[in-house]
Every structure is written in C-alpha cells, then in structure tokens.
Length: 217
Image (tube, rainbow, N blue to C red; front, side):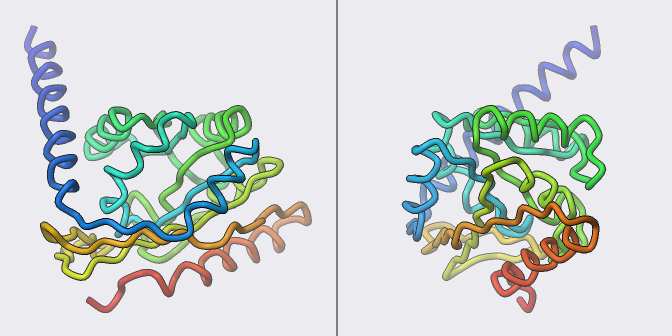
C-alpha cells in the first residue's frame, strides 16, 4: 500500500513539474532559426536526428511539443532524475527509451534505432546524462548509421540566464529572456569504413558543436 501511495505522489509531482515548466517557458521571447530545411526533409519522408548539449535542452522543452505529430523518440537515463525528465518528455508528446547511449548499444540503443527506422525522427542529448561536458558519446554516431538519417545540431542561447554549478553548467533562461533556438545544417555522418572512420565522425560532430557550448560562464 505504501508503494502505491509513493507512486501516486511521484506521479502527481511529475505532472506539477511539467505544468510549471510549461508555464515558465511560456515567458520566453522565443526565436527559432533554420528549422525549415530539415523539417521539410522530414515531412518529405526523410529521417532526422536532432542533437543538443545537456546544458541547453531546457530551452527547447516547450517548443518541442510542436513535433509530437511526427512521433519523435528520445533516450533518457534510468536514474531518478531521468524518471522526471521522461515523464515531462512523454507529456510533451515524445516517446521515451530508457537506458544507455553507449556505442555497443544494449536494448535502449537498439530500441532507438528501431524507432528511428520506423518513424524517421528522434532526438539525442550528446553528453548526457552525466558528461563529461562537451564530449560527444558514440551512441549518436551509431544512430546516424540508420539508412538515410541526417543529424541536425541544435544550439540554444539566451540574453539573460542562470548557469548552475553543475558538471554541464546547466543553462536556465531567466523569465522573459530572449531565447534563440538555432538549428544547424543537416549532417550526413554515416560511416561504413570501420572503427577509425566511426571515430572521425564522432570527432567531426564534436568539433562542429563545441563552439555552441557556453563553457566560460
């Protein structure tokens, strides 16, 4: 009985967290840049994998509800914090896969590959859930091997924000901040030439995205 009440309480708190985040994010003066090219590609039957740093994902939570009709998927860790994030993502219309994004896969990565192959749309947090910050993990390159998939970087900036003293210097835009979500160019990171080519693609994505990480704040 006690476990049942704990579950109900956790469920209610996660619902409250979702609506608080939605209400807080509504104050942002949001600008979105370079969304059309990849969204047209997705609507035309192509496959898209959106990627961002852990530091910046909060800025996109509310806006990403717009993508729910495209059946997006997101991998989230099995930690307690992950439980909250997963619930919020699911209420935003994203399918969640729980587990690790290591290169070798395990069930979670295999589920993500299956979902991306079927629906053609997924998201990935490059250095989550615990870093190191700014280091692209190999799982994203494994996902990029799904035939026809293009990787699209996402960068979030805010004219006013708090930066937490966490491993990723997590960014929380202040109320009524001017927030910009900028999508990068579509990247073909498919690599069929072995381990060295695989690593080159991982480093290529890391090099492209590192300038967008707010490291010195």
